[in-house]
Amino acid sequence: MIAFALGLAVQGVAPPAAEPDIVVIGRRLAALSVTVGHDPRGRFTCGLSASSGNARLDEQVCRTAANCVKSGANDQGAVSAWIDGRKPALLEDVRRTLARGAKS
Image: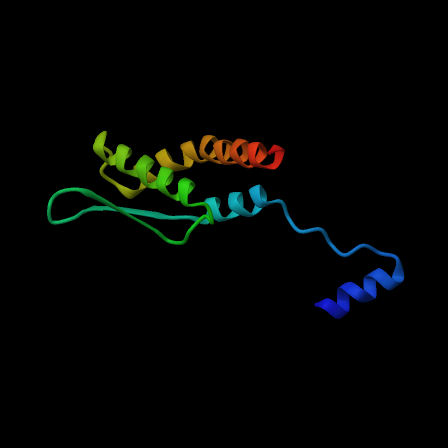
């Protein structure tokens, strides 16, 4: 990979730019699936198929899923639709947080 980048530099072509963090997080978020259950004490548990790369976002996705189930959704399709409906707002929150961090 380093040789490839050096080869491009010698030819006067810039190596490809890394994707912005928000793009990577957005792709990971789009691919997530969530499993909600109950522990022996009746508390909600949440499992993600993978991390979005942002712990706060992962927590918010789990909270969204738990709130959906608490509101009465009882099948995977309804929970998935609820979460998919919230993903744009959750991602926007991450984007704003990253933008504030970049300005500091």
